[in-house]
Image 1 (spheres, rainbow, N blue to C red):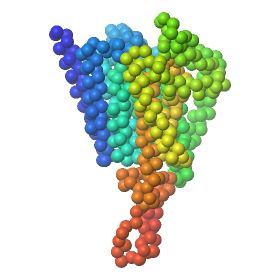
Image 2 (image 1 turned 90 degrees about the vertical axis):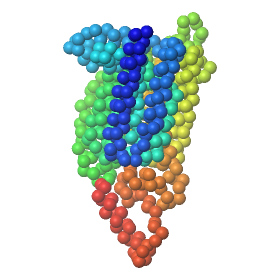
Image 3 (image 1 turned 30 degrees about the vertical axis):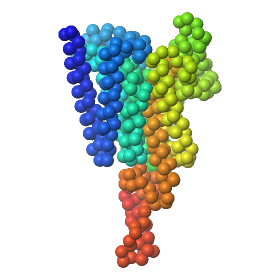
Image 4 (image 1 turned 60 degrees about the vertical axis):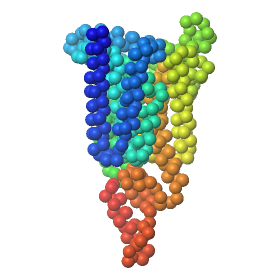
Length: 469
């Protein structure tokens, strides 16, 4: 009884600390975004995730519903690491590949002696921090209403209600994606060097959590910087030139390492075993002890084989498992999340078609991470159960991109001059600055005739555009 009371106290204290940290993050982000109003949806999302943790613990069905054997593996490593002094080599972040989550668990165990449910609350906070950053990026791209809609969708996304509290790598990868998107948005809009540093922090977390995702996030950051620099160069920004040169020099320097990493020998040693770890040739054969969600092995041993097999890997990642393949409660919950994911993917494609020609200019900071993370997970995915969790990161990015493109699609349907002030008041500006936006003509012109008023308005807009650039 005494241990139970102490455990509850740990959970309560951890909940208060995490809630304060999330409120502080929202406060910092809102300083430069006065119309950002996403506290309520994320408070609701945080509460719902805590309720899931509490209900699973109260009914003693957590292990059955979560069905995550790798939780036991990482927690065993964390308990062992917590017994070692901080100066031990095992505490070095990159002592082993994909080891960062163990360091996070072990730190909380060693410093605070937290019980398992307190660790889960911390993971919820890490996950929501990443989604808050993504919602803030949507604000920068499409305004306050779009950010609020994104926040509600991400807070109530079915699969995340369960997976955000798992003691695995997912929360850290959610934070990594959020940092990359947030930094990419700053680079995309104004070639901000701080944004590059933020993307670097996200890529570093990705390398610590899943090395293959981390390297593709690094590549994603390079593409974002290059694309944003080319856009800035077209707009006459001289700051773009040094960034373009830096990317070119970095690409030349990295080419030998890239060729070595994608050689036949390297792929056989690194990538193919990673994919084979969860895949099985007995997928779906009903044999005792077989894995009903195994997808079968794909060939990733050469560059050509990757090109050939990747489409099938993407299909498995986005569509598997089919409803008739689920075998327990955890998989049923995952199937419900799959329905949400497929709906979001359908809407994303639909709005992308409506906004053809403007997809990257409007949602580039979201599309680039989505594509690179999708490729990373498609290469590694050999099991639809693992794919459930991989897909939650793609859904987060797809929701944000879908909302951004939805705003643009709605603008296209509006008559000329009726663009929403929620976007026009702050940007993002097209390549030509504010002059490229349509401004509604006022009803009264004062003493000026219409032609004179039009000439004066054009001159004012041109001056403001030069100030913006």
